[in-house]
Structures are given as C-alpha cells and as structure tokens.
Amino acid sequence: MNNTKNSNLLAYIALATVCILWGTTYLALRVGVTQFPPFLFSTLRFLMAGPILIGIMLLLGKKIPSGKVLFNQAIGGLMMCTLGISIVGWAEVSVTSGVAAIICSMMPIWTILINLFVTREEKPTPLIIIGLLMGLGGIVLIFSEHLIEFYKTEYTKSIIAIFLANLSWAIGTVWTKKGVQALIPS
Image 1: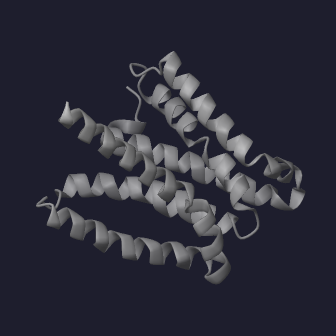
Image 2: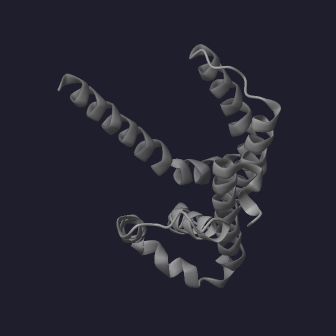
Image 3: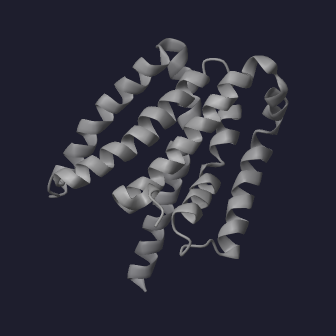
C-alpha cells in the first residue's frame, strides 16, 4: 500500500512539474524574444539544456547512446526544437503567447493524425479522443480572449508559421518514437 502511495505521489509531482514547466513555456518564450532575437534565444536555451541533460544522464549512470540513436534523436530535435520551438519563438515576436498556446495545444491531434497515416495499427481510443478534445477545449477556454486575434491580418504570417512549427513538432514526435522508418509508410 505504501508503494502505491509513493508511486501516486511521484506521478502527481511529475504531472505538476510538467504543467508548470510546459504551461509557462510560451510565456517565457514571449518574454525571451522581447529581449533577444528569437533564433538566438532558442539557440541559447538549447546550448544550456543539452549539457544539463547530458550531466543528468551521466549522474544517473546512463551511457551515451549509439550513433544511430543519436542520429534519430538529432532528426527529432531538429523537427521539434529547431523548427518547432524556434519558429514559435520567431512568431511570438508579433503574436501573443495565448495565440501560440492555442495553436500549440493542437500538437497531440497532429501527432495522432500523422501516426495514423504512418501506421494504421495504432488507432486512438474514444477515451484518447475525449481527452484530446477536453485538453484543446480547456486551452481555448483559458485563452478565449485571444481568439479574436486569429482574425487580425497582421498576424496571418505568424499564425501560419506556428501551425507549421506545430506540425513539425508532431512529425518529430512520431520520428523519435518510430525511428528512421517513421515517415516511410509501408
């Protein structure tokens, strides 16, 4: 019973951490791009994050991955971080973090659609679909005052860029999960 309580506590702590860190990403990105050029800001973030993650990995006694694994991770990182996050940062120079959050909350939907295209064996369950719609609905509700901004023509280029960055993140997610064969349907 005690292990179950500890396991649940760790799960709740992990969930809270993800909610706080992920939930503030677009606000932090918006603030960062007001102080630095967007691609420089992203570069600095990733140059700091990489060594920190390697340090944590080594502290946990993990080995450096093989060349093939590093290659697959590099492709995923290019799609998710370089194209995904950096382009969102570039777009947030002209749109609000609320607009970015609404668009980026669609990433799980893109991921499932791409995954369905790549492999038809992994179909979302009704519970997953309900969860996706509830999550998207919750984000839209939280940032509902930003919905009018989707009609501003001066935001069009940035909104399209965020959609493409979001799509790139979803492709990178599927690539990372499935490896090189991910985007070559059989």
